[in-house]
Image 1 (cartoon, rainbow, N blue to C red):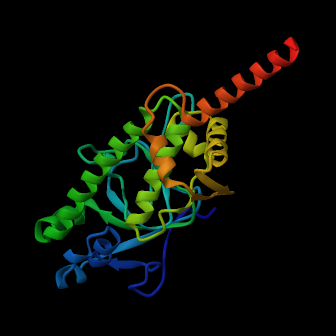
Image 2: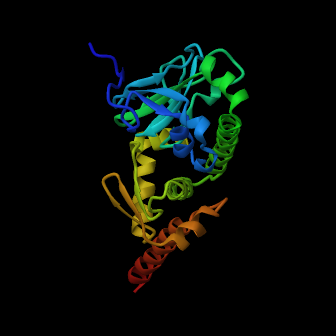
Length: 270
């Protein structure tokens, strides 16, 4: 059986090739201004991970960091009963494996959500290079800082007691990440499944579907399979600030039910 992680065999300097330069890595990571003739001369290997393939496994010895050059991954942890908890998502320019820094093993698994390509940066090569090339050291510091900010974003998501608000925050965060890559912040492509989103947000699968339907009905978004269009960004941003009680949509539904009940009582009384 063919492994889900296979080396690529193509001519150099193409994102789908066997090798890329450290300058390519800096460009993909969002710091192209730090590329130089020195980083042009340093090369890393690349690998392809097929959809549903495991790039790194929870508990696996920590040997390399991986930068996503194309595709996407989910970070997961599995409990003793086999339940898979989604911790986050990695897309183009993100570094996979940062949770293993400071220890000798990976704390979570990284599973490809689609056919993806990564840059393999072995620690035995990367750490000495960081001493010689400050741009690579900056890359690691920037990646670690970004990871901390994303964990804060996750806490912000989870602080919302209403699922509709959690989904609104998730969509806005995804829009920001897409915008940072130069893509539209209005038309989003959900590379993860609704079940993955539910696990990440700490809600039931059906709850995510209901929340998306509620956002559609309130005019905030449009949904077509895995494509999301943000129609009313202002309303979505207002919704994400709701921290307690019912969401505006739920409040409107409740008011409508009360109105209908009063109308029925009035009809019976007549």
